[in-house]
Length: 221
Length: 221
DNA sequence: TTGTTTTTTCAACAAGCGTTGAATATAGTG
DNA sequence: CACTATATTCAACGCTTGTTGAAAAAACAA
Image (tube, rainbow over the protein chains, first blue to last red):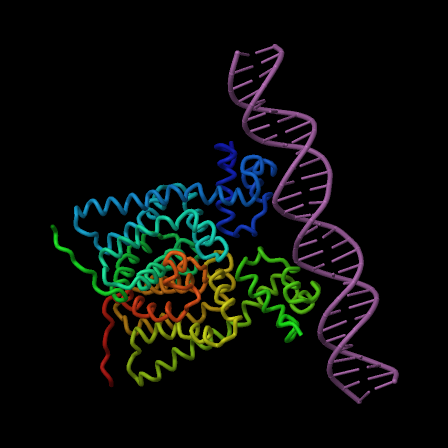
């Protein structure tokens, strides 16, 4: 039995759609390409998921919930581990990035496609207003709040712009365009999320401090 | 005479195509939407630019050359102004960002659309391998070289990843998705490139130093 | 088994797609 | 003016699109 014939057909449709949408965007993929890739009839995708747009939402929503929950969990765990003291800036940034590292390491190749899809959605003026708003905005507040605790004197606009830079750097990394491979002559690889991850934490932490000032240290009570 | 009836029709086609491609991507725009927006017959776009893909290339190429040349010029000017001494890290980053600030301030609303288009192309796995490669990769080498001068002991991979983070933060800013407006409760605006620009320089400079070490100061000869 | 529900395929629809050759209008030239 | 080249429109082509109702197959229940 062929690889693309294993598993539930409805799941295969989601997997193939995820990969193709990530690569070519919503309008760059046809229902027939998806059904062909999943080795099912074109009508089956409509039967399970409705309209093409609904399928797109289903694909995006499938892993969004899991990712958001993991993010919140990691953030709260690091808060608890600090036992009363505020988290370090590095811990907050790490909590933001760690779930994606987990996903990368999970071995499920679908996660890699999903990350590229996430980058596509994040940078799209259209999808950002619907999919990001409905699936990810709610988690951002907690991160900003954690940052406010350690940067009580920083202006909110500064915090948001810095968060925005982290988001952007992350998005381009998730997109895995292959450009860094080319520009670096092979010294860096788009697929090497570990390399991107390790450097991103000190980079972004230093950036935050340069813009928002040194964080306030609160004594243990 | 209506606004969309002014100017050369071929330029109007490029302008409308630029705006629509930036918003919906290559596959999300039809030739008829473009021609309708430019108030011309659908065949005229083909007459002037050939296939749809050629039109897309023409749109992207129109401002790419100007942008690339300005970038190189600014970089070399700052090199000359340093009169023998190496540039500061901030100067190098500024040279990378300044042309976009210029474009923003030029008053031409087309530039704003082009920036969103550039973000779309930068983050697309498909277009990155063709359009970015053919139009922008050649300029990156000069920036990396300038960075190597002031970070002679840094590993190349570190420099490239840091450059990658700057690219990503810039891309998300150029995309103008409106997300930061929402998340910040109106305290930040996607359209306010000046605000993004001012904070980006100290942020990225600090990030570079955190990953690549303090830059080497070379005495005046 | 028979009956029922769910899943999957088949075949086809109307609408929209990019593209093109021929016809018409406009501008430029002498 | 007439002649020519360029610009623009018109009308239509063959093809692909997303979607759907009905038929067939498979799974399930009794």
